[in-house]
Length: 212
Image (cartoon, rainbow, N blue to C red):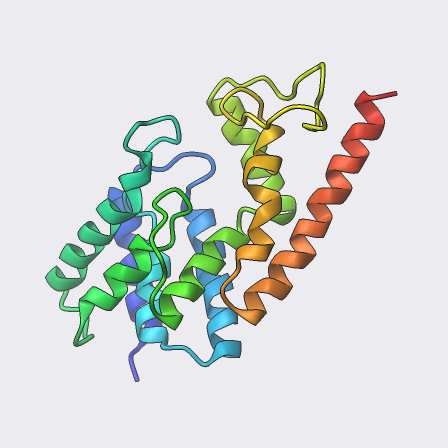
């Protein structure tokens, strides 16, 4: 059994020294994803020797959301994580399974998660895009990208196609409200459903405030 406390400290130190962070992809986000992944792994009986490094290092390369290379970020992170794990002699016989779990976590990369561990890391990351924290992350990302908060003509995409390149609130309809149905694990689905329900309440309250 690995000393996970030791290795998590190693991963954290690496990120603090090397990770290019933004307000939605910072060390706090990493810690939340790690905690989500541990919770799901415990319920689903998955291999923590794969999940813990993959969860810690899944965003070790961050590409801005408005970059044309955004869909390559997880593959870039996987390669860097593999290099780093080899350098520190992380004791796992097949680093490629960790790299796959990192590469497959990204929504924009559209890579199918082939292992239980990859499915769990993907679920854990997507859960952090939901709920109260997901709402805050969505809003701060919209500010960073200098998007309008919502369309004054149709704030909630009732008669138009959602466009999250222009309006922040549209991101709920383009992506966020769909995530709970895309979870890979039963544990992930339960966690995501609760958070998705909160987002619907938030949007209903927002509608009551801006559409009187």
